[in-house]
Length: 205
Image 1 (cartoon, rainbow, N blue to C red):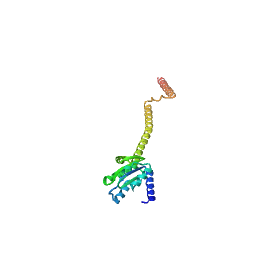
Image 2 (image 1 turned 30 degrees about the vertical axis):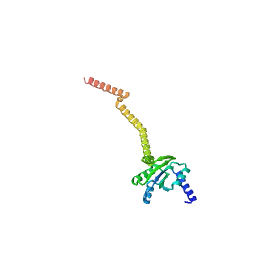
Image 3 (image 1 turned 90 degrees about the vertical axis):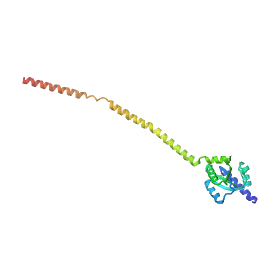
Image 4 (image 1 turned 90 degrees about the horizontal axis):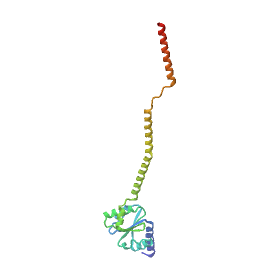
């Protein structure tokens, strides 16, 4: 490869490292073109899987401030550059390696921190960003529903208490007293009737 071409390749790999929040170093010995194509699909739309030259990649990584790959840049090498959810990409690599043992995960880097092969596999065991967001949304919805219930419940309880007190007061209220005027009129009428009867009896006698 001519020097200008090498410089351009180094610059391209360096820029990929800088643009990625994670990268996973692999050895792809024995993989067919069809398998490589499937692997690129498995790691997700926010990751690219690129075959690289070891010497140029070592230079590019150093220029990007990454020295985690120096000892592992041997053999046929390909790197998964991740710009999205690193868990999704790690899951894709892990699951593909289970069915295609010729793919070897050597290590990685996440937000500038070096990862061993075991740490990449542990990363794959985590829940993806979409799952975590869905769980967070569900938890927030449950909290809002609970808050609404706690706000409405005391009002409902207060309304039921007021209704119960009102019913109790109505049941225990004394009979209303008769109007004074009505009592006096009734007594006067009774007295007049008694006098009329007495008068009638005197006349007949």
